[in-house]
Length: 143
Image (cartoon, rainbow, N blue to C red; front, side):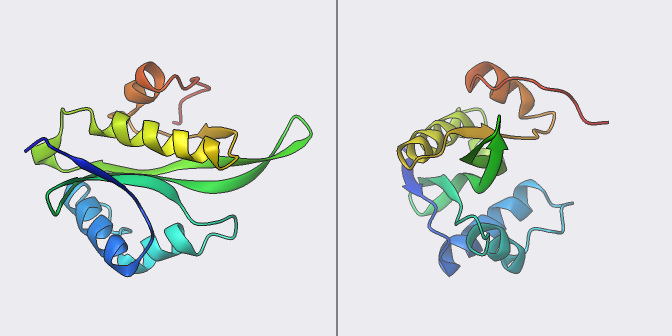
Protein backbone atom coordinates (compact mmCIF):
# COMPACT_ATOMS: atom_id res chain seq x y z
CA UNK A 1 0.00 0.00 0.00
CA UNK A 2 1.29 3.46 -0.83
CA UNK A 3 2.62 3.26 -4.39
CA UNK A 4 -0.17 5.33 -5.93
CA UNK A 5 -0.99 5.98 -9.55
CA UNK A 6 -2.78 9.28 -10.17
CA UNK A 7 -5.31 9.39 -13.00
CA UNK A 8 -7.56 12.15 -14.22
CA UNK A 9 -11.25 11.55 -13.51
CA UNK A 10 -12.96 11.13 -16.89
CA UNK A 11 -16.66 10.81 -16.05
CA UNK A 12 -17.05 7.45 -17.77
CA UNK A 13 -19.63 5.00 -16.43
CA UNK A 14 -16.83 2.90 -14.93
CA UNK A 15 -15.23 5.96 -13.32
CA UNK A 16 -18.55 7.12 -11.88
CA UNK A 17 -19.28 3.63 -10.53
CA UNK A 18 -15.91 3.50 -8.71
CA UNK A 19 -16.27 7.05 -7.37
CA UNK A 20 -19.81 6.35 -6.15
CA UNK A 21 -18.62 3.26 -4.30
CA UNK A 22 -15.79 5.17 -2.58
CA UNK A 23 -18.02 8.11 -1.63
CA UNK A 24 -20.62 5.71 -0.15
CA UNK A 25 -17.88 3.97 1.85
CA UNK A 26 -16.48 7.20 3.25
CA UNK A 27 -19.86 8.93 3.75
CA UNK A 28 -22.39 6.13 4.43
CA UNK A 29 -24.95 8.60 5.83
CA UNK A 30 -24.94 10.71 2.64
CA UNK A 31 -27.58 8.96 0.54
CA UNK A 32 -27.18 11.46 -2.31
CA UNK A 33 -24.13 9.64 -3.70
CA UNK A 34 -25.74 7.54 -6.41
CA UNK A 35 -24.42 6.89 -9.90
CA UNK A 36 -27.20 9.06 -11.37
CA UNK A 37 -26.36 11.94 -9.02
CA UNK A 38 -22.63 11.79 -9.82
CA UNK A 39 -23.37 11.60 -13.55
CA UNK A 40 -25.43 14.77 -13.16
CA UNK A 41 -22.67 16.50 -11.18
CA UNK A 42 -19.74 15.21 -13.24
CA UNK A 43 -20.92 15.19 -16.85
CA UNK A 44 -24.20 17.08 -17.19
CA UNK A 45 -23.09 20.44 -15.77
CA UNK A 46 -23.84 23.21 -18.32
CA UNK A 47 -20.49 24.87 -17.48
CA UNK A 48 -18.58 21.70 -18.40
CA UNK A 49 -17.45 18.36 -17.06
CA UNK A 50 -15.62 18.06 -13.77
CA UNK A 51 -11.89 18.38 -13.37
CA UNK A 52 -10.21 16.09 -10.88
CA UNK A 53 -7.95 13.19 -10.11
CA UNK A 54 -8.14 9.75 -8.52
CA UNK A 55 -5.39 7.91 -6.64
CA UNK A 56 -5.21 4.17 -7.26
CA UNK A 57 -3.39 1.52 -5.27
CA UNK A 58 -3.21 -1.09 -8.00
CA UNK A 59 -6.78 -1.31 -9.27
CA UNK A 60 -8.23 -0.11 -5.95
CA UNK A 61 -9.57 3.47 -5.82
CA UNK A 62 -7.90 4.87 -2.71
CA UNK A 63 -8.81 8.57 -3.00
CA UNK A 64 -10.87 10.91 -5.16
CA UNK A 65 -11.12 14.66 -5.67
CA UNK A 66 -13.08 16.71 -8.21
CA UNK A 67 -14.04 20.32 -8.79
CA UNK A 68 -17.01 21.46 -10.86
CA UNK A 69 -16.65 24.22 -13.47
CA UNK A 70 -18.57 27.43 -12.97
CA UNK A 71 -18.78 30.86 -14.56
CA UNK A 72 -18.65 33.89 -12.26
CA UNK A 73 -18.66 37.65 -12.46
CA UNK A 74 -15.52 38.68 -10.59
CA UNK A 75 -15.25 42.45 -10.20
CA UNK A 76 -17.18 42.97 -13.43
CA UNK A 77 -15.21 40.39 -15.42
CA UNK A 78 -16.72 37.03 -16.47
CA UNK A 79 -14.28 34.30 -15.47
CA UNK A 80 -14.06 30.51 -15.46
CA UNK A 81 -13.65 29.02 -12.02
CA UNK A 82 -14.14 25.84 -10.08
CA UNK A 83 -16.27 24.81 -7.15
CA UNK A 84 -14.42 22.29 -4.99
CA UNK A 85 -16.94 19.48 -4.97
CA UNK A 86 -16.27 15.94 -3.79
CA UNK A 87 -13.28 14.56 -1.95
CA UNK A 88 -12.89 11.20 -0.27
CA UNK A 89 -10.07 8.99 0.92
CA UNK A 90 -10.72 5.36 1.78
CA UNK A 91 -10.18 4.80 5.53
CA UNK A 92 -7.30 2.36 4.85
CA UNK A 93 -5.46 5.09 2.91
CA UNK A 94 -6.04 8.12 5.12
CA UNK A 95 -3.13 10.05 6.58
CA UNK A 96 -1.01 9.84 3.41
CA UNK A 97 -1.65 13.36 2.11
CA UNK A 98 -3.67 12.04 -0.84
CA UNK A 99 -6.23 14.85 -0.59
CA UNK A 100 -3.48 17.46 -0.99
CA UNK A 101 -1.82 15.57 -3.87
CA UNK A 102 -5.12 15.23 -5.71
CA UNK A 103 -6.13 18.85 -5.14
CA UNK A 104 -2.75 20.19 -6.31
CA UNK A 105 -2.93 18.09 -9.48
CA UNK A 106 -6.50 19.24 -10.08
CA UNK A 107 -5.68 22.94 -9.67
CA UNK A 108 -2.55 22.76 -11.81
CA UNK A 109 -4.48 21.09 -14.61
CA UNK A 110 -7.38 23.54 -14.26
CA UNK A 111 -5.18 26.62 -14.42
CA UNK A 112 -3.53 25.19 -17.57
CA UNK A 113 -7.08 24.97 -19.01
CA UNK A 114 -7.81 28.65 -18.30
CA UNK A 115 -9.60 28.42 -14.96
CA UNK A 116 -8.63 31.30 -12.72
CA UNK A 117 -10.02 30.50 -9.26
CA UNK A 118 -11.33 27.79 -6.96
CA UNK A 119 -13.95 28.24 -4.26
CA UNK A 120 -15.09 25.72 -1.71
CA UNK A 121 -17.22 25.02 1.31
CA UNK A 122 -15.20 22.54 3.33
CA UNK A 123 -16.37 20.33 6.16
CA UNK A 124 -14.60 20.35 9.52
CA UNK A 125 -12.24 17.55 8.44
CA UNK A 126 -11.06 19.38 5.31
CA UNK A 127 -11.01 23.05 6.32
CA UNK A 128 -7.46 23.08 7.71
CA UNK A 129 -6.11 21.30 4.63
CA UNK A 130 -7.66 23.92 2.37
CA UNK A 131 -6.33 26.79 4.48
CA UNK A 132 -2.85 25.57 5.43
CA UNK A 133 -1.83 23.28 2.58
CA UNK A 134 -3.73 24.72 -0.39
CA UNK A 135 -3.58 28.42 0.60
CA UNK A 136 -7.31 29.07 0.48
CA UNK A 137 -8.61 32.27 2.02
CA UNK A 138 -11.16 31.78 4.82
CA UNK A 139 -14.13 34.01 4.06
CA UNK A 140 -16.52 32.77 6.72
CA UNK A 141 -18.19 29.77 8.33
CA UNK A 142 -21.64 28.39 7.77
CA UNK A 143 -24.00 27.99 10.72
